[in-house]
Figure 1 (tube, rainbow, N blue to C red):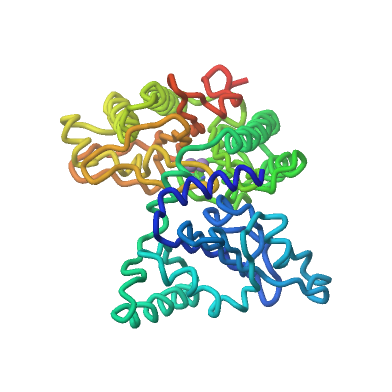
Figure 2 (figure 1 turned 90 degrees about the horizontal axis):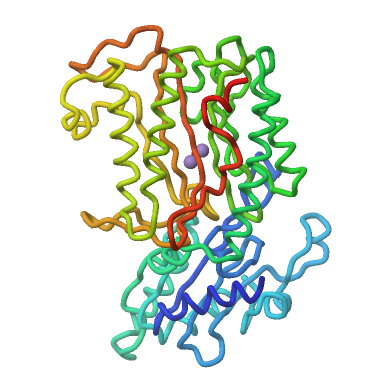
Length: 435
Ligand code: GLY
Ligand code: MN
Ligand code: MN
């Protein structure tokens, strides 16, 4: 794997030219008082380094004669390591992680300037670590103060996302292995949930069964808080209480996926807990499934990303018009987003080290055209909640539709000649969702 990280760094360094890029590790998150969450590294930092400790800084300075890759890390400290685990340390950063030079993080202020002073630009993402943002700005300011005397130094800061995000948007074979692994484990958990759910069970029991499968197969855990939403809870997009008992005639919407070495899966299925859709549930399900299938059929290299959402919206609007939940001119309904009370989110997002992964979706008015190696979700839905209100001038909602929330979400890889649905192992046809 070290060769893979080295390869990523050299790809990035080609883009940096005479600049210097600085990447900051994620902070250690606190659960409460002095109890900490499991550590979760910053995704871009991890992408470039594979280094999984807090209080670290990676510097890439391709123009530096000897030290093109420098790591600042926590020094080894046997006493502290007894409490909070092994540290790679300064020597380890060089020997195990391939840094040309490494220092204790305590030396950052003293050592960083030598990597910035001859750069023409600093690449850095202003993140949530305000204190570290200040540190970077302070060094930049100090170098600008002596710029008139030297006539060399960084005259600009550019967001590092502009150079690293395009790399992260195209997954390598090693990344795809991990994404396939996360997808396969998540598929197994969903298939088990389909069998396990029935009236009388509680949402949390289904959550427990699924998360057991995640961990049992070596995943780190859920990629995001599992959504196990029965009945009208299915209309709450980020429902996470998961404490209701499933009733006869309920739909169950499950949005859950696991994370494998930080790579994520994100799957949603919706099905009737007693094995039989009501006519209204079936009608809405058919529309959402048709919207997803239409969107999926559009995916191949060169096609604009935005067309996927447009396609799904059109099928949803046509479907809602056919059953009298929307009325009027279809083009106007789409243009003025009159469908939004029923479909308020986008049809997907990039997927990778982050569940909502980095990357642009369009360039101003110009589209982002799909490339082999892009991975994203396709997740249309229709939600008719107890309180859903049509926009003015649109039909009233008959009570028989209320409480129906349906989403179908798969993870898709763009391949050279089309696409591969990484999560197709979970069924979604109507006969498969019934029993
Ligand atoms: N589960 C989060 C999402 O679907 O985007
Ligand atoms: Mn999801
Ligand atoms: Mn999603």
